[in-house]
Image (cartoon, rainbow, N blue to C red; front, side, top):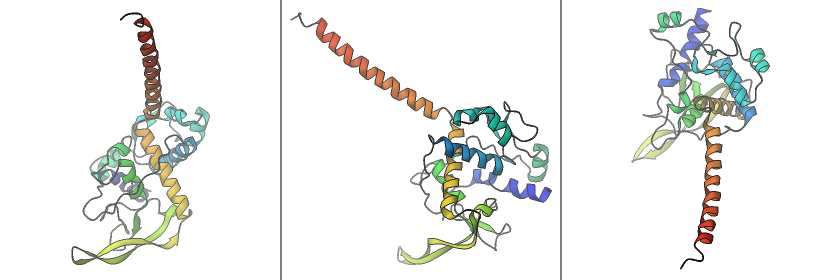
Length: 252
């Protein structure tokens, strides 16, 4: 049991310190499903099942998931650990004292992970997460048996490998500044996962969309209110202009 927890804690959390630089591939554009309630609900399910075992989301409460269309009963039946309550914050299942003893520090909180990664010319934090979660490959030279094109020499294993399966990158030789270099070309599927590649990409898009929503739950509401305010000001400006014209029409 301890060995499983160690593997899970090492996974996904080290993603917070990852930076796609020095040989990392270009980031793919993450799908924006911030208004797709079904996608956000699926992302929340993936987050609770694969992330919350070891990583907290201390600034998010379970009952806030009602904002993405879940009822309190659905949250209680499907997304809570045994000892959790609907009004609790999203706490990791692992004991923080044990985590600190094993690793020297607690696994990082993931509440704002989607807002913490960006790079000039690369993309947003959501783009990084989407690329990272889909760029693992088998590397027997590594202690974990895994590596990642978005974060070369990553120290964490691929905890979602049962969904994606095992893959290996295919390279091609290209000329760069007069020198031959190996450039990533495509993927070779070594072992199938429980999902097809299309299904896995869809699932990771849902997960990243949820992480983006969790980092700023009020974003969509703020945008809607902003458009409403702008529309109101435009209408009021028109009426003020016409009233002003009517008021001064007889004054020369």
